[in-house]
Length: 546
Image (tube, rainbow, N blue to C red):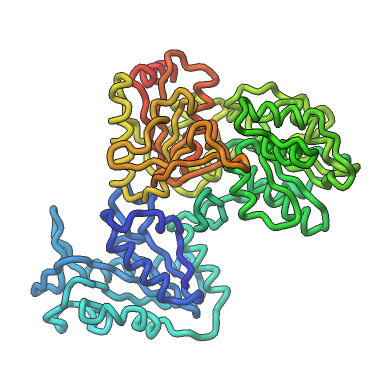
């Protein structure tokens, strides 16, 4: 399978406007091996612009093993064969295909000469028209060997391989070309795990927490990291956990949200413990012979009480304690967890005060070393720009993602009777843009107990997958309804992310700190597109205070 940049294209609906380009991208990605690299413009950053080319009219650039470049211009649908060569008719213009290809091929060649000096980069092209058979091949204005029409489309991969054959790998040239193309597409790869999917997302975490925070040395090791959403806190937490295991130590990774803990447990290596705070209380209850009865009221308070009294034996202790989403923890919970550490054990505490959605008391952290990061590498630039302005954040969150993204879409409703219809409108819009249901998260500004969405398993044509109120299995796991679109409150979805987030039920009379935190938490879950469904009165409040 070829390397494809940028990623994120698999999240787009193949039935959207760019469906034909997505088909070609999948064909190229699956048909070429890993010695080939594909750069493309079929990406969410271009969805709002309706422009899917990476350079002028060029849709794809394929770099072969030896550093040769092949540009692919795709023309779907019908073409016109005129005296001037092949033409493509659009609603407002007619474009000459040979001229477009020649102009853009030459333009890219000139740019390459400016960037990669003292070296000639081979640049070739093909016209790919999968729906049309060129009848007058000799007068098309393009080398017949460089036309892949309907009669030859099954040979596309073989033709590419013949133009870009295998050979001695030129690592230096490939690296220079990747940097050049990355500047065009504004991409730097970094793995960002997202709940419910294993695809790699490409964003930028340049010199991030996971790299430099681990280099700090002091004793006793008590490190508090205050990082904004998307700064790389969870990457650091997971990295510290893996490093502990590699060093022959036994770590415990604790977070507040059970869903986040379950996800981390799926991708973390064996050798330690990954758990939610209450989940660990359930484990300890069984360990000491007094298991929690989930049919009785307030089982979580029972778990907290057990951990308040728990005094671990030596074989039940850990070498490293890693707390993620620490702002959700009560101070006494921190004391309970620190009792799990062996002498000379390391403690990592990662938090974001702007996500203190439960208004927890701030821990004193006396004697701890503290570092701070205000850089968000996950959210697209336009989303952060709008959120900084809407919430009047001071200081503003630094937008460090290379992705521009699209503008935040705002849909208003006058009263609660309009809420469901407006939420359906937002979900319909997400589908129209091209997102599959599995890549959309419907989040409520309100808690599950007070949300109007809680009773629904379907709104409009959209089926909802949501936690069933008060229902848990024998292991204490929440039970979910069947549905395509994940829905939850911002409280429970903290620490997670989704390509497209619809944040609904935003309604307040006074814009206070808790209102700011709820919107901030929900908005920064989006890695691609953000849609806000907000009451008109709340929007007026935001406009007046900004």
